[in-house]
Image (cartoon, rainbow, N blue to C red; front, side, top):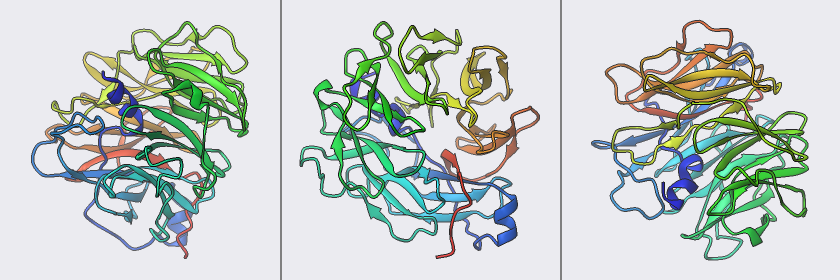
Amino acid sequence: MTRYGRVLFLALGVASGILSATSDFLNAEERSTSPQLVFSSRRWEGEFFTNDTPGQEGRTEVTGTIYRINSDGSGLQKIVELGGRTEYPIPGPDGEWVFFQSNVTGRLQVYRCRWDGSEVTNLTEGNPLGPEWVESFGITLSADGKQLIYTVHNGQIGRVVIAGADGTAPRFVAPQLGYTYMTAISPQGDRIAFSGPARGYRLLIADLPNGEPRLLTPDHPESFAPQFTPDGKTILFFRRDGDLYRVEAAGGEPKRLTEGNGYVEFRLSKKDQHGSTDGPQLSPDGSMIAYMAVRDGVSNVHLIGIDGTGRRQLTHRSTNCGRVRWSPDGKRLAFVSFIEGSKYPQLFTIDVEGGEPQQVTNLDEAVYFPQWSPEQPNTDR
């Protein structure tokens, strides 16, 4: 994988999914009984093809939309459609805002809007850190919703930026390191973990606001997608071979949790040369990890304890699964999977204890980037 492809494999991903139908706003009873998900879509003409690298020619032009839906499949509602590739929605913790990225201006930028689609704002408009930083992507939001972290790119390298949730006061994090990306902020909001620099991509951690970064995985290159446990003391990550590891935020030797997962790239088609890598997802209470593993050539959802015990396969589908996300109460998982005979992945949910997955969407478009809403969204505006 090229350096450019590596930069975007998680932040940009591959595609998004979606709906041509709309429905009325949910009534109060529906809001209280059915948790909501947001997801994005991509639509394209003809066969999907992409290298998914900055400036790469020959990619299929796509248009994306961000939607919300009840987890039982009811209440489908469009949130925002700007044109271009609009994707990667991140709900704010207060149910007021949805953050996302879009290339409607010709370059990827970070946006936010209300849950009803109003007050759409480009938070990185004008390249506030300098005209050379033409793209912004890969959103991370702090647990309290007050800090926004993303990566800026100048066509050659990327750097981590932290700003207010309204995009104000952006600043670089450890710019002296060169290429950095794939960020996580501790639940307490006092530390940031990220991957970099180039030619190694080890994990680093720094105290906020201005702490000096230190290496967490000096002997483990190609370490990506860090996630903090709820107490902020442990960091989960995966390596390029697809296996999961944990390391103490205070330092120490990383512990390998899995072996032989296989490197999972979730692709829209055989011509999608850089599918989006699926990172592990930590449960809300920090006790379990949901992740993708390849068995018999197919990726399915697996679970394992944070201590490396209790590994089990949760889904047993014959078509690839990806994009697994925990519900806020930790009882269900959302994921996307292809349907036999269809070229488009759809949205599913499944009980953590097992059982058959429940299909949430059945659309003639590809569903990607699902996220649960942490609070009941405020649409009464």
